[in-house]
Amino acid sequence: MQDKTSLLAATSVKLGLKPNERKTKIMKINAKSKQPIKIRDTILEEVEEFTYLGIIVSVNGGTDADVKTRINRARVIFNILGKVWNAKNISRNTKIKIFNSNVKSVLLYGAETWRTTNATISKIQRFINYCLRRIMNIRWFDKVRNEDLWKRANQAPIDIQIKKSKWSWIGHTLRKPPSSITKQALKWNPQGKRNRGRPRSSWRRVTETELKEQGYTWNSAERLAPNRVRWREFVNGLCSLE
Image (cartoon, rainbow, N blue to C red; front, side, top):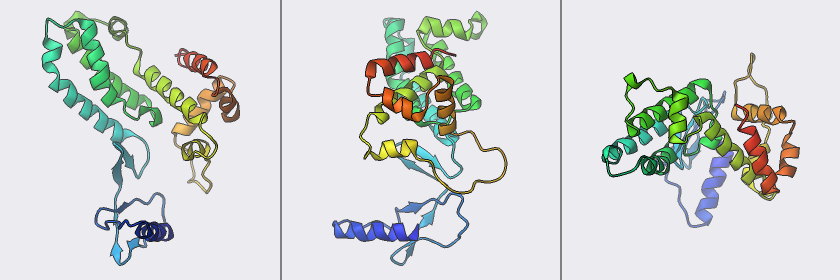
């Protein structure tokens, strides 16, 4: 890590850029060494999480912190648009479109790369259900089932929406040239010794399981991805199982 940091700093100087030591942070994951990382003589601050392009990266992995932040940001937008949801001169269909474009887009930003769990999906779905019931003026004593709520609002369950977004993104990534860093990262298998016990569920393991259920591997998916029509059929079939 020190070698790469020093090389980054030296290369930046050659290009006319000077790294700001106070703003530069580092994160160590499963590192045994406690040796500090420096740029020149300045020790860089070590953090347990940081925000990159709007996504929170945590030292313990997972997406819980990012999902929590996404829900809070979407809630702020939803409350700002309170007058829209209460307006009687705006149709319900228009309100749903505004919700999808202004609230749900904030909520699901980066969702295609989330490592989702049942608890995560439940949190997101509860927030969406709350929003839809308020938009459609459905009170708790109306006893409207969630399935009926989604049907009225023309909304699919959130796990299906995230799954479809993920596989659409995977298809886009698989169509990139072999030199693409994104494509290389998608198929990268890090080496090393893991801790004892059952491995944690990860984005990659869940994705590979979904592939196997359809009788595909990464290589067969890569051969299918260039055909956009067949890939859309594949994604629709994959996301209609649940």
